[in-house]
Image 1 (cartoon, rainbow, N blue to C red):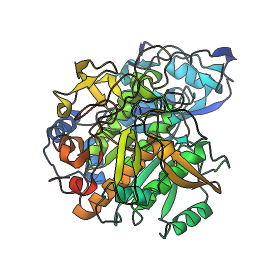
Image 2: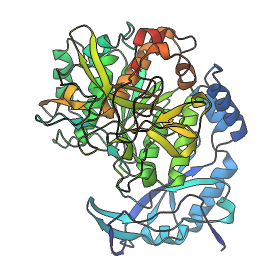
Image 3: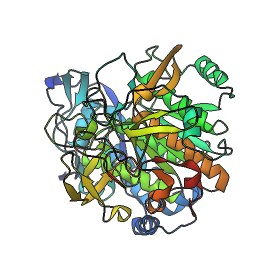
Length: 525
């Protein structure tokens, strides 16, 4: 059988990883095949019109499935491929363009032309591969991505916890004054009067869990009823608190408590998945196409540098975000907490994915000081070095310049202006400095958290409020936000390492932090 490499599927071992040998030939694994979108030209045209600022009636989930879900001949071709290699079809979802196949390492190696390896890395052992996935000719035009053969951790949570006193090196930084509840931040940012009635916020989580007793105590202390929270299992992952507030539990609970306090009448659906490229994408597509909970806004606080992803995984994720926008679902994504390098030690600037997708609302971070009733100062969040914490931001190496960023420029830390030629990150911002951070209760521990992980659920809560007021789904908001700088508090002081804040959009805090009522008044939002 003639095989062909799947474009963009090339993998390398993690830097510093050591091969221990071949993967256990009898190990059973599940692999997600992502298929092409039906009538893709029509979907591209819809997204292009939205990107130009046209307001189109969003498709329902059922309408999207009928128009753009995988068609029977494509699904049948994958079934036949599975049968020929002794693989089981354990899940098939046409709207998600996903078929999940199960089999042993030996069977997967034979089916996809790989040699799966057992690898050791500082972060732990993982099942890895090198090179490209191979596909037979009949699947070349059908399959967009094959995910899950390699099960290395794909993403990290973007939160930071307030620590003890330390020197601050950022010239723009001002001494920290306090910490805030999400309710106080909603007031300081002048959010519109709404509790998000009739909305559902989807939260993507790649580990950890929450304890209902913590949520009851936290929201009770705020004088709020605990929101309705539903845990959704994806790829066998479940709500499983670790008891470590500094671990993934911190991410899960931060997302729930921030979004739930901002939009207490909204339902929260928490999608738990394994921290792999397959698990991450499966969680996102499950949320987008969830006909039961029907989230109108997603919040994603996990990610990693673009260089850590395969092209096929980024293509598949971006394809999922385009489906979300076609259905009027806004995807809010944290821009990262390691400054302009995104934690990559190669001397270059990098941006975080999936925030760098032009179809996601990338959320950067500020350092906020305020009185009880008003903001007294707000600058770029930068605690002095990427290890301590600083907002992510910069220019994508993968995604083209979207029309709503045409004509913008970055300002380097040395003051040089450079026109944007690719997607710029972030779009928007809000308080992310753990030293002026969010009061949370995690695993019975009261703590103050920051990071852009807090900004994504804050913006998701704001959009849920606006959706409730307007009785429609905001969807693709960037084409509407960029012409309306009056809806933002422009952040003009500070840097994230490689980039300097400036008037208007910049690669540290985007358009700025929200002026909620002004944003709610934007026509079409």
